[in-house]
Image 1 (cartoon, rainbow, N blue to C red):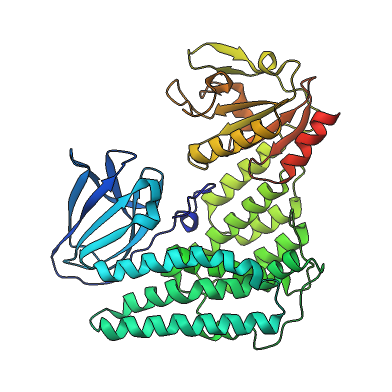
Image 2: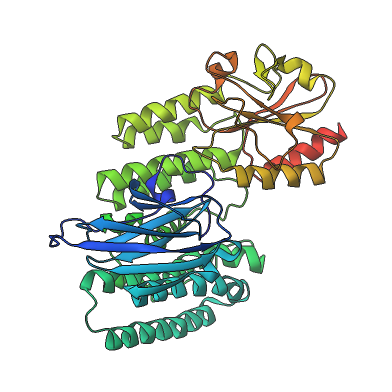
Length: 463
């Protein structure tokens, strides 16, 4: 399953679901299997963001767990850095087999409950394959694109009906999940089409869409709160909300969203989503993602103010206020100095000594929001494309065990809670600070995932 990079403490980007309110009889449900080329010694089973149990591998890399009084619904399991959904019913005996070298493609289930999980995996893999197909589809006119989508939906519906026919004992709850797994990825692509068409056709503006183009919306309830934790559903909702906001008259945007668009999107979320929990999560996700996409300490104050007015989650509001304060603490033109970092021999170094005379990018990271795998990938990319720049990684609230194995240890450091760097890291969220050879800040709050960083690094080299 696609790994989550920036989680922002949102269960949308953690993605799992358990149905609520079911009265299952007391029963034992079995969950086990075999992991080939394991990445750790255990498998974790979760419901929403709650750990149900941890199952440890034996000497043959097998595990077997018992779940008492399991509720019917979607769960997810994690092994290493990978995760995937499973649907469990009371008294299932669900066994999996997978090879971590090809996690999703190798994943198969056996035992009671296997069929319903194997088809969900097939849906996931089919969606991955269809991604390539849509590169060409998105270039089509709206009329031709709609014909393609209708044909695909017809095939998905046939698959759905055939499964129901051959598995008559599946529950209505599972029917709902299977329909979402099959149909919603296509619905999502229909919602994305206007933006994708602009990108691939290079016409510069959105195509003219007929009234029946979004006929699928008659089949969708965007306020199924319990389903917001299921990725195919939440992804559709996100694309629907963005598309609805664009329809207010906004022009296509590529690198970053305007303050006006962000404000309109926040208001669209507020007006469209009835659940307070889901609404608050989407509001926070939006304002933070757009901030990171802008990749600058020059923030859209009006967008943040709109967020503060619309959210009623005080913990979220406090966290976002800290992020906003952090963004103003180190500004372009400042001299970066005044704090120390530890290397992995526990020796202290002044940051000004580390960056002295070097064009540098310093990435402060926190595993709660970004994975070591992603950091490794990005830093290697930067090193290969910008060899004249010094790339430094600093773990927030770290210790001498927190090095990233695949990156050069000489460029890795950590700060503890006593560091003065915490004055501009109060939110504990990741940030890049880019400085020139004189130690002067070029960008005080860049994002490791933003495309704007490439341009800034090129400018840094050439000036």
